[in-house]
Image (cartoon, rainbow, N blue to C red; front, side, top):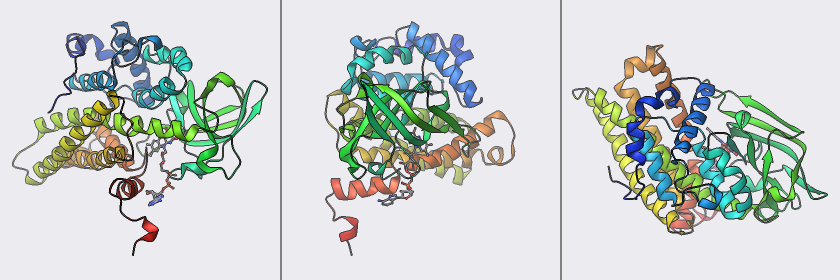
Length: 381
Ligand SMILES: Cc1cc2nc3c(=O)[nH]c(=O)nc-3n(C[C@H](O)[C@H](O)[C@H](O)COP(=O)(O)OP(=O)(O)OC[C@H]3O[C@@H](n4cnc5c(N)ncnc54)[C@H](O)[C@@H]3O)c2cc1C
């Protein structure tokens, strides 16, 4: 497995040396989501006490300095040492980067809480009528005194019912202003007017929520980026949502794959072939994301090409979890053990990878039109 080549002293050594002591808060998928969230918070608290969660975040925001490469190294080290990925990493990567770039004051206030395992965040972009076509969203924000009042509904908000803060994209322009009239707000989910209802997923867990906002007050200093400039912030944040999310998922899948190879009966040709397909795709994903992590660290602005990371991620998730099913076919189909239930839940979750963070069909269109320069779909044939 190709390494990141980054100097992050002691991260791997510390995790291995403290492996036994950290098992009571290992956030692996063998417990309920609530249990995993509690473990994730505790895991982050202990890593923070050792100065590890701050790697890759600037000192003025409570971090330890470094870049996306240091964060990527931490995520790799966590899974390589046999731990599950803490639940807060997804929102941290997506929203932490947006706060740093577009409202450093909010970052210095709220990032330390998350890095210390005292808070969870969520992303309030999708709505019942606005997913792939995000620019059609209808949640509205109107000025009120020194701040704003937000009214509307979000859906598929991961960890919404357990989160403290939500990055809400809302319309501040005219109803037909599309991407020109959007603004990103940092919303306190305990504020009056917020109601969060958990939604059950195919994995049997309440992984995401509906978030209802009824005239929720947001102070002016909780606007992230320019008013009506939310589309630019969202596009900026998508580099991390697609690139860094894919990196941390490949780290998880490498650990899944190495456990799988230990259990593989090499005379089972079908299972061996499924593992080989998964491995090949995973190797390509890692190489691709490694490049993305390094470009983000160098301050490059990634364009539509980051959709390639997302396409590779979706494809690899399917192949790796199909390989799990092929190797452990009997266990997967009929056993009630916690491990079998976890493997089934992971398989179902892998199917969401071609939907969340931008559906695969839409990503393929972006690559075709904006990376390869092919004619727009309507103009073809
Ligand atoms: C596990 C999970 C977690 C999520 N977490 C969050 C979260 O935390 N916060 C958040 O805001 N959202 C979240 N989402 C929502 C996610 O971003 C949306 O599901 C996604 O953007 C797709 O939108 P949609 O579900 O409305 O599907 P639609 O946009 O309605 O798409 C339905 C189907 O039509 C296809 N399609 C749509 N437009 C086109 C087109 N132009 N060309 C070709 N095909 C097209 C799509 O590819 C898809 O197959 C999550 C989703 C999942 C599955």
